[in-house]
Length: 280
Image 1 (spheres, rainbow, N blue to C red):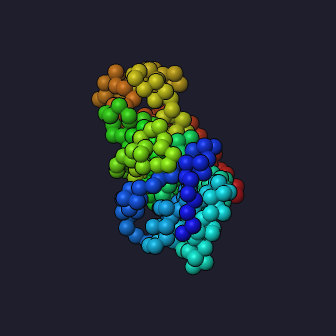
Image 2: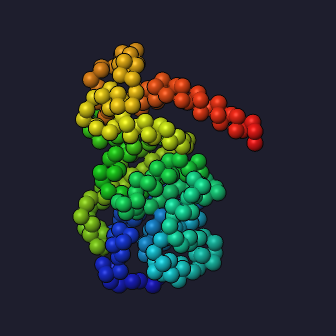
Image 3: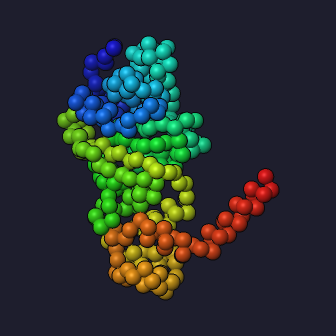
């Protein structure tokens, strides 16, 4: 394979590029992909070090925003492309994802995501019904927020969304010395196994309200948008302390609170959606 020698100079800061250079970590990533024959969607293949291993056992569709790297990948993987083991999609992956389906078949997402886009990409994948799992390298703090359990200080709205559709796990950390150029933060490998998909922007907004000030009482946060007496009555009915903090509540409780506090709105939206379906 044709190699670009000066990786540090080649990395584009605009795209947050840090090239993984440790083959042992690449093998650990490969081993962490669910064991089946589904296609892999790789976001940000870079120089193709992970892609090289993926195409030996999988069909891969790679999405690369950097035109220079697209040219490199098309040359370096010409045989895999010709054999239909690899498809290269050049451009912004979010534009390919505009209709909420990245691929028109079930797939696993694998990616080394730059910090500025990581959360957005993972949220897209959680909603994509064809995405079966998410295996991504992200900043450690981001991985914690998606994989945290109730009671842990990192438990957040992102944790609730993950637990709503499946199970998140921080597999292992990757130090900055394993990259060229080395980032200023520690990265982690995050695996989310999905059982289903859900796209509810109203629930996402509700979680933003609930976690707006994470160290304040949950009831205090919610009372900025909902009736305080109703919130306290619901918490008492659930036999939950009125002083509970957002990170101490269970995912199931957030769904219960959301359904009860938004009952009229939810019923109204359901009826409106039913009318639209009947008219179409």
